[in-house]
Image (tube, rainbow, N blue to C red; front, top):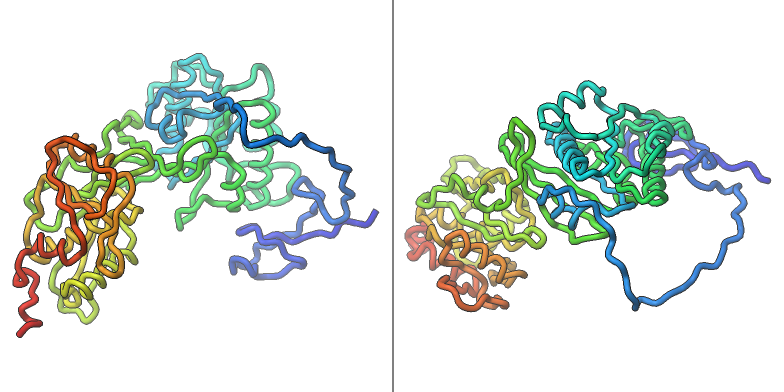
Length: 467
């Protein structure tokens, strides 16, 4: 048998090289390439003789399919984000910034499941047993039967959780601390993370136990380690939030057993995380309806409608290059809105600083917020408050047209439930709810929106261009 050829793998990005080099061609980092044996538990090398495969049974797409069995935690916001609870035999990856509350959330979930007579194992690789017990006491979970261990070796963890009755849920905190005897690299490297995740997925699929893996994130907001980990697991959840605000959002970005883009909203307190059943009231709690530059956006997160306030401040500047500051929205999207306002509406913002903020530290990602952003900008520039009982949503194209968005009925029903009697929405919107006392103003294009808000050209300073 021919001797397997060794390979060189970057420990930062996972790029495979044929020979060692000081700098990785994939990510540009220095001194991150390590020699690996392709036979050493990572994959099959070129010298390994493949065995003869066996024929598998083919079937059709039609037929009865049983719903995946789930383990419900009783925490409604967590169950919503996971699609109805943890699926048995699945692996869920939870990522988030340090100190955002990942361990707190999972400890509360473990305690809730333990009270439902489920066998829960919590393995901590970052904290000692005493530290985890202190957190459990603070969260009121010390009286539960959650089994606790502090270990980082993959083989020892698998041997521990394999003993006795099959666990219903296993929590590993975190995957960056795991290390295996089959890999020679240090803990936290690409090889160790990939090897540890593969071993945990194999255990979950063989035993039917649900497993939750905690992952650290990089400064760019991505889960540290190879991106292949996110493809290997069944679901990926991001725990987001601003430390300056008391709310946290559990966002689903991947789910093989449920919808994506779902969110669960929590409020951080001294006794842990508290569920927020109506996020719109949280984000609109301190709203000043009489202030210019404030618009209420009716957005959607998965299947949940969310109302949030968008704040804009347009102020004259003496600088040669005006400043554009954005918090909670895409800065390139703001630049596009400003260009469309100037090109199609004659709104001159070249001598003004523009500041945009999404209240409550919330982050908006859907383009349906375009009309709310444009309304807030025009309102601030004209120093004219928007109608306090009106919501805004609609996508703006480069031609200045207002395009319809999906799930219009759900947005309007949520607004009406919270006391908003009016809405400015695209003129071509479909699926409008029937009945009700709401006043809907259909907007055809951006100039129509600007004229309804500002009224006269003098409020926007257009008279200087006409002179």
